[in-house]
Image (cartoon, rainbow, N blue to C red; front, side, top):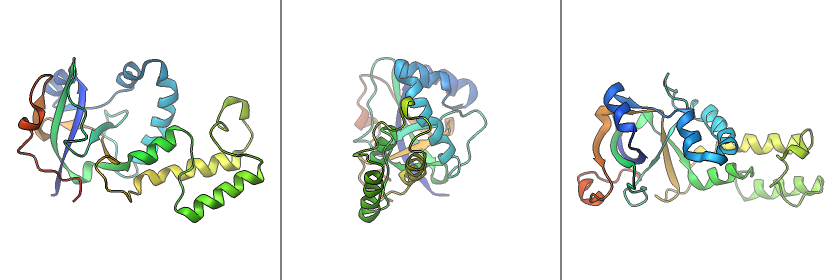
Length: 206
């Protein structure tokens, strides 16, 4: 079986879950606490992400949302107060890779084109409807309007899993769980992250 190395910053309370259950999963409550007032907006997008992602890797029973991971040491969020970073070695078939730049387009209700030709065709469609852009057509005031364009935009979002830019700052990874035996290091605030994980090679380009 092929393995890859990933890194993820999580709340320190996850240590108790890891010890008690032998794995960490992401719950809706955790996301709501983390996102606070912005939770309703992001949860709608996360729900759609889940529907797409579970077609790539089956969702585990206890997982509500995936766990966001960095594919490289350099791009990993380092531990801060009340958090730890898990440096993990994971079976590659458990990993859901996606394009972080394209995910930003999803968060902004934007169309993800296949290529330049497709992008130009979509712009022409907007013109037919008298629209300069599609930033706000998902607002409540447009319910029932521009349904064809909305459907085309949402259908395009599955392209976040089509990775053409292999940069460590673009490629991101998701897991439905982190199993205890995948954890190679747990880095706490104030510890030398790069020294601790020096035994883990970068696998994101493989």
